[in-house]
Image (cartoon, rainbow, N blue to C red; front, top):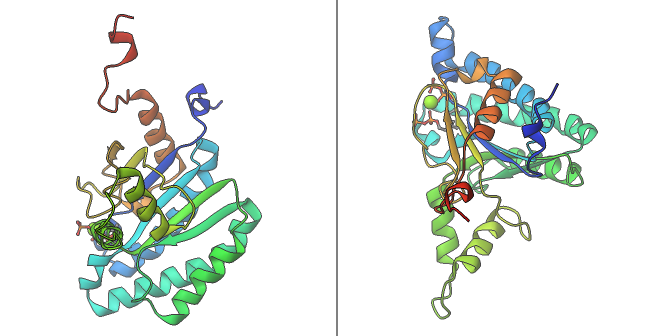
Length: 243
Ligand code: IPE
Ligand code: IPE
Ligand code: MG
């Protein structure tokens, strides 16, 4: 039976830094790309499990702006995998009511990739079960800089106005979803320029599990841990105020 904690809130934004593909492959004597291929199966499993765990927005880090520094072959193979993923998952997303969108820069992606993104976003625009966001050529610092550079310098920059600008860079008219639960697989404990603004009060969850091995049970364990935590947002917990 599903623990009752999953019904506690009606929105949960989980974000995942999907790390460890390369090490997963290397440990098996395989080329790194095999780890990325297995990793895309883990993405599928995660997307399928998310709605049942109360997750309403899921953002996954697929390719960082710093990942362009990788060998040309690996970059090309990663882009080809992402392209295949977008083309193949589109129909499955439509069938499951999943809205798929991509965050990050588009100007350095190939025209084919840009077209595949547009097609997937358009076909799935009506999905209401889960908003599944894939970060490609994404850098949180670049996003914040781009939002800041839109400021006219005349009016006072309020937090709300900045937030709106930041949100507009991703999905015009849609409020910026704060991250509730940030998961990183692969054993490293860092953010690597992912959703820095949105994760200001995110609960952090690190696991040694390599991304290709990640599955529904791991996601469930992370969500259960999230529900065991007490979020305070800087305030004193209600039980401790004595009122
Ligand atoms: C994450 O796995 C996938 C991407 C960054 C594209 P890595 O490729 O970083 O795997 P490790 O960290 O080298 O094991
Ligand atoms: C972060 O992983 C980016 C993605 C998972 C897409 P990296 O493997 O690129 O991060 P670092 O280099 O270990 O910080
Ligand atoms: Mg890595």
